[in-house]
Image 1 (spheres, one colour):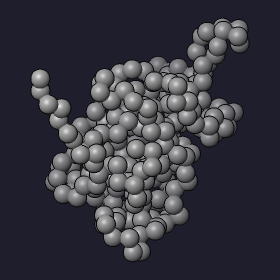
Image 2 (cartoon, one colour):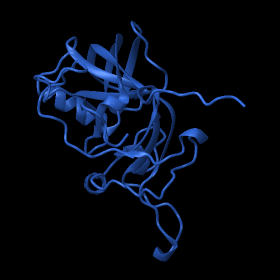
Image 3 (cartoon, one colour):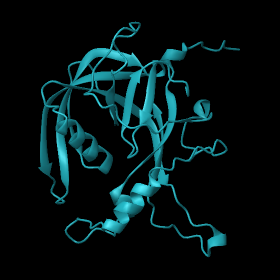
Image 4 (cartoon, one colour):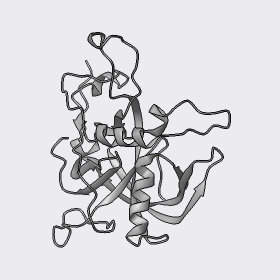
Length: 242
């Protein structure tokens, strides 16, 4: 019999669950031009729903995660973004790092040291995040972010209509619950270019070009949170939910 392999905790991925806003999930179907319209009423309903995070530990999610990771997910706390601009920190050094934090972007392909990646950010959580940072004076170059690879993930509407409510069809979802298996290490990246643009679908977005650095942080040594719209951010400290 083969002996079990012992893996240090800091080298293990982390299964996280959080809630994000998603225009495309509940807006009317796209027109022939690929655009969607969202009423003020729907925006208000999304704002209300996004403040309620499902923390039902009896739910096992969609079941797409590998068998060895089917444990309870870390339900990320909902916390407003810090008032300061993003600031990197040093592990093992506690002095003057109380205000340090970094926005965290998930990617489908790992970002390695020296590699560049262009991100097209159009989801409501990203638009609000970048709008907020730019309003505070953030610019590129000079802005630092964190990037983490998702090896497995799923999204599903947070609100479903039960049979007791007269049907089993899907209600227009007001928010989307995300399950994701995040890699063990978060890559620090420098933003080299940032500009506002409009996509071919007519939707506003931010285009951000980032370059991976050699600096990485163990995800289980971070305090990981999401803002009320579902944008992820991290601060120094052990993640108590890990």
